[in-house]
Image (cartoon, rainbow, N blue to C red):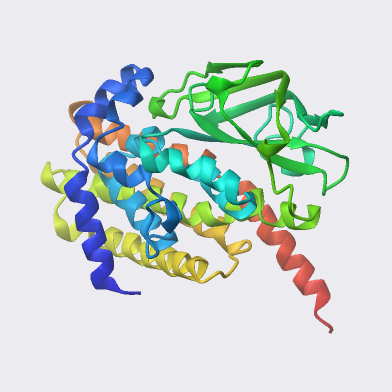
Length: 371
């Protein structure tokens, strides 16, 4: 890993990341996310994951995303969930979209601040793609009719464009993704779900009532069903989970920085915590570099996210326990860090799920090994 480049990238983000005042307002009124569209840090997020043909840079892959997320999270993780950008939908369009679909999607982020969404989760299926119930039925003229609902989807009710997963046939190969522009499509009803914190995520519940989209919206229509499934949702989650772990690490690092600046702790007392955060961050950077080389993470992506979340939660909890009585009230950033870091547990899969998946893989490997 090029440590000099990492340091330069972190400095670039820090120089663009004076964002706390904006997000204090967004916590009270999530509709204000539009006001940060032209912020320097929003510009970084808005071009995150863009192909070179649309203004992206070759070197800005998962490693850059990891540095960006960790550095912004140390300032305020609310910015990451509020800012414009291709987000998770960008991975799907890059993997599944044909040239015309990619152009339609990515040129919007090249030209202006644009908010996206990734709609997989459902009320009865969670984020288990194999059990989703939303239906997409192709009509005789080639159009598709989408019926069903999606739940706990960031920005969906107000986004400009995004990706929706629906069942086109029974079985594991019967899942497809569709490119949707909610503000231009009839039959979509959405509402914002209330959250305790990070309200700029605009967590949404959206309902599709016989929504008609053209066949041009069907991502991966030029690919075999086996390829569509392999490179859609699972590949996106694999890529994002280490990055989500980096957000947790950034929240904890930011809390330590403020605790030292407020004289709640001294540098020596948190030296071990800083070393733990740095070690995990370097591990995630190594994983991200492997992803940029085209390697698959498998279960290790989820476990990296779990470990980063656990360590970060523990550090912030011990900061509060060691602080004088009333510190969380006297220092609102401390209570905010305690609250925000716990949101990571529910982002890209809870810890129990990742442990079960890893255990299943371990058992399969054990039984496959001859005695």
